[in-house]
Length: 219
Image 1 (cartoon, rainbow, N blue to C red):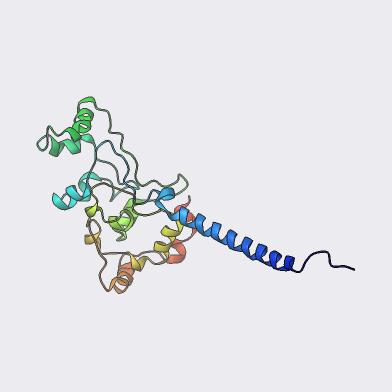
Image 2: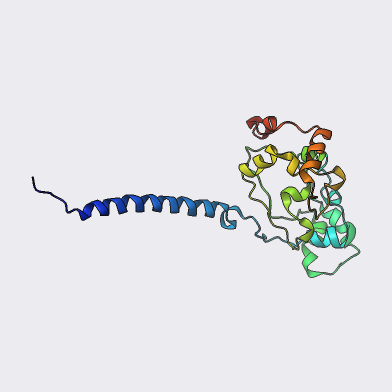
């Protein structure tokens, strides 16, 4: 029986198969890169706010403690946002005529809250409690980035589940002394893991098995 296809079709078939696999691999890689990028996660992208609030100015330049504004962070699941009255405690005396602070003055006079744009948001099916993390020695900058270097606030991390799980698997890499929790700029010491293992025990941090169980974060 005569050969139907020319032998070159064997080469074409192989190139097509390998090319298709390479194309699928390339598409998968591009999808992964896009998923990690700020275009998809909004990480490291400053968001438009009604007032260009600077954590750097307030925490580092002026030395204001995080808890002055985020009053419920040590006792509640939510860190809380400062009321307009809190802002006006200072700004009734400082920068009283600054144009950028007009929304603050308007909010104070009308009683209508400032419509801040949420920077860090988790899905409704995720349970997160600020107070337990603070109590166990997880600092603000671990999740929110070096706030003391942010002239405009942005989302530092993706907040993907695998990012959370990495910390829950290895708390010794991130835990710090409680007196360092609210530092707006923090760099881990050279002996972080050695210190972390001691603090994990001292602060009675649960085991990685417990911390990575589904019901810990999904209730």
